[in-house]
Length: 293
Ligand SMILES: NC(=O)c1ccc[n+]([C@@H]2O[C@H](COP(=O)([O-])OP(=O)(O)OC[C@H]3O[C@@H](n4cnc5c(N)ncnc54)[C@H](OP(=O)(O)O)[C@@H]3O)[C@@H](O)[C@H]2O)c1
Image (cartoon, rainbow, N blue to C red; front, side):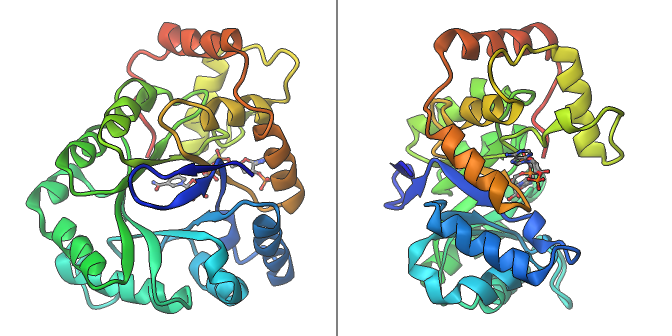
């Protein structure tokens, strides 16, 4: 797997990472989870992204991969959900980092994001200072922001973060115009989330989940022609090879899918005309389509 320098953080990240949202699903058997997580590292998928809110995800990564901690870049997200603390305060960030260290069974986390933190909270400064204190304490290597649109722009401009994570995919291209060039100019690491656009082509009918439904509607409105490509290949090669993106974190519950995705992304960028047609479709239909958190 090709590695890229992660902005100016000093880390090197694979072009395809694993979004470990599905890993947190209690319905996914523990043995499958172990196979997926070990299989990811064996494939060279050496960035794993999780969050406090992803169910069992953090504790499962700790359980299965504590013995391989030096082999991957570990990314998580904080800001909420610690009993006894108000969300989006200094103490909840500090406690959130400590809780993540415990669940992930490690003494350091490479990248910790403020998870979809609202703009007004960022501007208050308290949570940013708390995350930077965790960096100063050696618990976190890179202070990061995960989100989209106005708060993402603030985060990039602020100089307070070493990297960002944001939606980049066929149906969510706003960051390509604004955030990616700005992040690149400032030397920030960039993780592309939802790179497969939540695979809307799986659904004949409008899906129930609101975020997936929004992408499904956009996908239908764009009327893209995948040409010779499977949809997942089209989507992942589009996202992972956008200028300014360092790592695209695909979410999957299946090692077989991840293996396929690794092979597809390794083929390189889409032909320029194909990528340009996808950009043109978004420009024609995507008026008012903001980045999805
Ligand atoms: N605000 C935030 O910070 C935020 C928000 C959203 C996401 N994220 C991060 O981004 C990661 C990825 O996002 P996501 O999982 O929502 O969306 P995604 O990666 O765009 O799409 C995931 C979907 O694609 C399917 N898929 C993947 N590879 C496939 C293949 N080869 N063939 C067929 N289907 C395939 C998966 O189904 P299978 O399980 O069947 O493979 C899964 O349902 C998350 O896990 C998380 O780490 C962060």
